[in-house]
Amino acid sequence: MATTVCLVRHGQTDANIDHRLQGREDRPLNERGIAQARLNAEHLAQERWDVLATSPTWRAVQTARIIAERLGMPESEILPMREFEAREPGEAYYMTAREIEERWPDGDVPGAESRESVRERMKQGLLHLVERYPGKRIIIVSHREGINGLLWLVSNGEIGTGKTQLGNGSISTIQHQDGKWEILSHNVRPEE
View (spheres, rainbow, N blue to C red):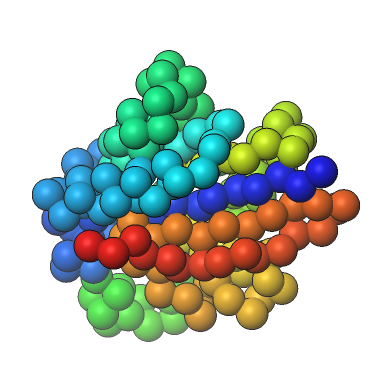
């Protein structure tokens, strides 16, 4: 019995336009981000989904609510899970990659959560859902670093962290069956 998991990156915020790290700060979707979430909802509505989990960060919750409404899921059934939160950027909060590289050329940002930590907590959240809802179809709304971390784990490092530029509103689908993971698609962006 296969369990299908759809990983949705939240829609765009104003900070995403400038490629600034937002971490866990609650920032709303901008107009394009709302449009991306609506396109995701339409795309996902072509199939049946049983469970919708989300990062508790506002931009992810907004995306999840738009999807839930289109799928006819009550908002009360959305599962906020801290395991799917954004990576903590530490002192690099609201900085661009260039600014971070200039300030910390070795990449060691004080207070920043490690990529390994992000992957591990995302994996734990994913495994929790798969164990709790075997054979179901699950949507997880999360963030770039976390989704890339899961894709990296499932693909044995072939895609994901350091290799895949996930766009806002992108959809990646993985499947678990007989103890094995398979990537069905990644970084799909419904037409805008």
